[in-house]
Image 1 (cartoon, rainbow, N blue to C red):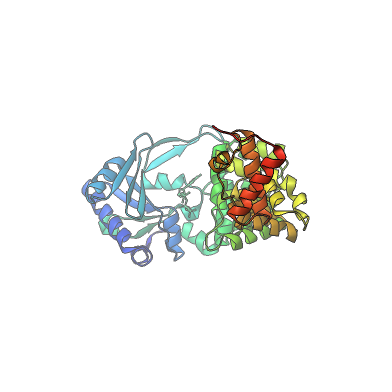
Image 2 (image 1 turned 90 degrees about the horizontal axis):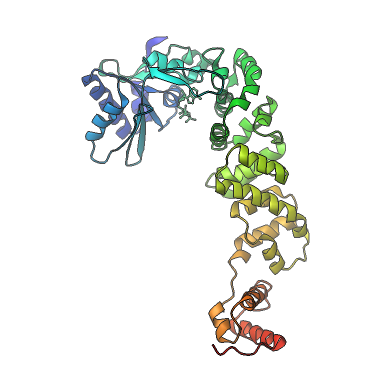
Length: 426
Ligand code: ATP
């Protein structure tokens, strides 16, 4: 289906006027240079669905770097970044970011390989895309502005609400599309079309050929969705989740805990770290290490996962209703906040939850008034004794045995008496 659908009015209606103005102008500048410019990918899909999407991807039949530089000159505030080795550029100004790519054709040497790329037409460029609904473009040339290009049946599939690959080697070329397909299916409440589903099942094992970095990227995209548990549940059902790690589960427990995580962090969405730590909550220490190294998780995420499992190991001791606040502090101090939130959400015991909550909201902020210098001035020798007395004061504060500076000073005097430390004159 070509040229029958005009997206011009949808662009004007759904995109902010600043962006509409920009793409209009960009189409004219490209034309003056004898190049053709197109709006492609997710934004076109979403415009067809009547939704706004501010991630603009533009493809030019010509030279993306030259065009980006020309466009950058039209706006003082615009920052242009170019990547000549990929023939891509991006433009950033105020709140906006636009990606610009040279139209290209791709071929794959073997499954899991990165593609070999050469310049191509817009049709070639759309042909290398993951699904028909993502393989549409809107022409931005002034005389065809807004005309839809749909070589692969994207409109029909949008209407039928199906996710369909463009050709039967699609998942073989790039198995990350398996995770992408599941993500779009669940986000849009579509269905993976039966032939595509067969291909997906046939090629699931090829996920083993994909680097940990690329799998992590796709997993992060899933965890960035409004309800990631839907895609994780579907990935589990299709036997795809064990390809990320054998012990990951996309079950009802996870669904319930993800919902709880959203309630806890509202109005913000939970971070990828919190979701990931919930996914990994039931893994053994060894399995967590496998996951960290397989996905090459960055340090902060790795710490969250390790801490979360370490706190889980102590969680039973927090179920005692009579436990002193200073002991709660000792058990939970030093772990990342996300790991504590993970345990707060994951635990089903009310007392344990109250204790973690108490640590997060109050106990972790409690500090004695007296400092190390004060203690030295009172005659405590520098070194381990200072640390010991500071903790004694902190514990007394936590357990409400000391509430004033005077209480703390009295505790120091008592300690000095019982430890018979000679006063320091230094
Ligand atoms: P989202 O709505 O999640 O942002 P998007 O469609 O904008 O989705 P991106 O990941 O930004 O997705 O990718 C932009 C476009 O690039 C996609 O619409 C798709 O056409 C294409 N694309 C991205 N990844 C792949 C892939 N692995 N294989 C083929 N095409 C891809």
